[in-house]
Each structure stands twice: as structure tokens, then as C-alpha cells.
Length: 423
Ligand SMILES: Cc1ncc(COP(=O)(O)O)c(C=O)c1O
Image 1 (cartoon, rainbow, N blue to C red):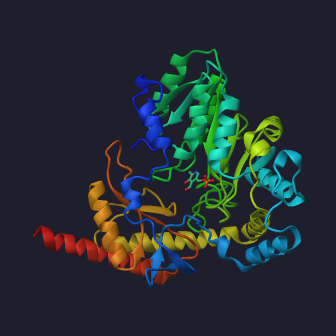
Image 2 (cartoon, helix red, strand yellow):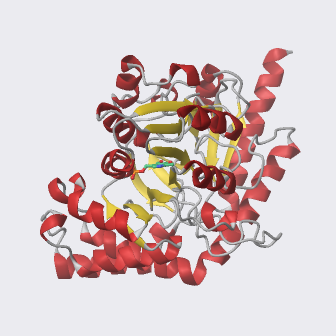
Image 3 (cartoon, protein in one colour):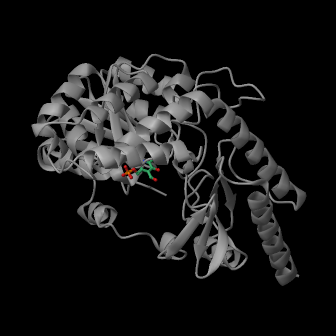
């Protein structure tokens, strides 16, 4: 599936208006609305109270679960007492010192010279992509890249850039398209570090080399990689490496040709978006970005929560990742016991089970919900270009072994029911 709605046929070259409108309309796909629209009345670990029942939730990808740490709550409360909910002042007029401190910390965390926070990744894309690609330039976008980049891609297109989709993770195709675009004009390559639809991390080292050779800028959304993947080596105790600094650290290559963006809601559990990159890019955005001039910055209790969450991450991140690896292995072994296999290729904590068609996945999702397990239904594909329905299970340090056991038992029961029905 083309997550961005960008045509995967490179010959198409530009976004069709119909596809662009559909992709930016805000309409959620039927696969996601099927189990959506629930009222969550309370949260305990990864159990949520929905329709009068405590069910096991897999609809948060806050892998380390730091958002539930009391130290983070206390920091948010202290900031609330001192600053109130928000300054309610656009950033261009002034910023609180906590926000500036968070930006320094994020630059350090991602290994970039500077960083800036934004209300959301949509704001990041809108303000940044048109800045990086001039009129007559080209935006190359992986067709599975996350849809929040689209408004920025469209803005660049309206300003005179061309948009070219390349097949998911197909570096050879991207090379050909970049070569066809010729040496002149600015170029931006948009990719995710880890694709929420599944599969291995993007080959960042190859993308870096390609961008260097072509004089292009990389725009990588590392929302999922940050907080999980880190500095190699990967060992059996630390299969994600150490430090959680994201796909660039994982690749071992210096990243000097681009920007890293993402939401912190997965790595440290706080919904604040960021961009990290060169000092010049960040300086320009701080002066001219529309989020800075026109929008409210992220709320101060969230900023304080993010700072405290980074402290927890620094002290305990590697231990939390060890726990996640243990839980992911437990989940995969549980599935194997009843002849099921996660289609995820490795032990990245975003595990997925294939269900056949998208309609099958919706039915399976409903059946799991009836058994007290809430997965994400995804009309995605991790099998080449075949469109398959999957159930996704982000496994987090807040899940207990009992939570996973319940999910595995529910999946196995479903598998048994299907077997019985087909006999
Ligand atoms: C890769 C990726 N980028 C961005 C987002 C959303 O970020 P934000 O809430 O800041 O728009 C998500 C959310 O699931 C995501 O998976």
C-alpha cells in the first residue's frame, strides 16, 4: 500500500489531485475505523477500560512506556504549578527556558548540531520540506512513508517542486529516479527510519551515500526507531544496540546531509514533535517557520514531561529495551506454539500477524476485541507489493507477561476457530 498516497508508479511523477485530496482529507481508512471510536475510561499499565471491560491494549506504540512513570508526572505537575498550562504566546515572541533546554537535549540525543520542537510532525513537514526544495526541485518519497509528511510535500509541489514516489525501500529504483532527474535543482529524499507498516529499518547508510552523491537532502522520520534502536553492536541481551539514539546511530554513519524528524510519543511517550539537523536549518526555522510565527508551541507540562522522560531514558533505557526484547521473544514463541508466525522479520517491538485480506483482518480484530485484546488493524503489506490485512501488536515495556499470554491465547483460539471452519 502506498501509505503516503503517492503513486508508486514512478512514471506518474506527480501526485494526482484526487489521491492528494484523499490522502490529506483526514479520513481514516476503514481498517482503522473498524475498531476505533472507543471511549477509554481509565488506563492501568497496558490495560484500558473500554465498554465496561479491562482489555489489553496494543494501540500505543510508546515502546518504553515512560509516559506512565511517576517521575514524569511529577515533573509535568511542577511545571504546571510554575508556568500554568501554556504561555499562549507564539514562539516568535519568546520561548520558555524548558523548551530551549529540551531542544538542546534532543540535539544531543539524536547526535545532531541543533533541534527544534513543533506541535506535530505535520507542522514539521509543512514548514521544512518546502524550505529544503526550491521551485524546479524534486521531492523523492518512499511510497510507504508516513502520511503526516504529505501536507509538506504538497506545499512544495504547489511552490513548483516535482514529487516522485519510489517503491518502498527500493534503493535501486530511487537511484535511477535521482539520476533521471539530472544534476541540477534541489532534491529531497523523504523516508521513515522504521515504517509503521512493518518490515526492516530503512537502509539509512545507503540513503546517506546516495544523498551525498546526488547532493540531495535526506528527510527521515525516525519516530519509531528513536528510543529503540541505538549504537551497535546488537547482542542477544541488547538486540537493539545501546542508547536508543535511533536509526542513524544504528547505521553507524555520520548524518550530515539531512534532517531527522519525528514525534517523541513513541520513544519517550510524550506527544511533542521535533526536527534535528544543522544549526543553519534550525536557525532558519526558528525565524521563519509558520509554526513559530502563527501557532502555539507544545504545552509546557508536556515539555517538562519530555525532559523528565529523557532523564528516565538515559538512566534506564537500556534495561527497558532488554525487557522489551524479552517480551517480544515471548510473544513470538507463543505464536509459534500454535503454528502462527509474526510476519515481522526481526524482534523490533512492532510485531504483526498476517490475516489474509483486509476484510479478514477487520473480522479477526473484532474477534480479538471480543476476547479482550485490542490490536491495530492495518491494511498494509509486509509482503512485497501484495496488499494484505494485518493485525499489529506494538509490544511495550509496560505490557506484562500475562498481557502477552492473553493476546497469544486469543490469536491461537482464532486460528483454531478458522481451522475448524475450513474443515
Ligand atoms: C512514523 C510516524 N511519524 C509521525 C507520527 C505522528 O506524529 P505526530 O503526532 O507528531 O503528528 C506517527 C504516529 O503514529 C508515526 O508513526
